[in-house]
Image (tube, rainbow, N blue to C red):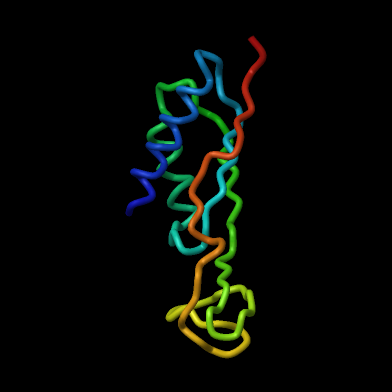
Length: 112
């Protein structure tokens, strides 16, 4: 369950950025290729946030689909399943252009 270590990193980032204020919401973008289970991430987030300024905050997860640019045919397509194949020609020579994200996009904080 790598989600627990990801949740811990999210809480650490949010806590540092909050500068002592209570965090009410954390919005994260998670790429499809990160293979994060949102329910496991939410569970881990609740555990590791206990006793921090992030405790009780809502975790909002935005899933970003995997997208790739095909070096064979030049098409850009959404990638689903493995192996990753071009949606147009079925080629495997792809440059991943989205879906590897894992970032805290924004926080909502209580007013000071």
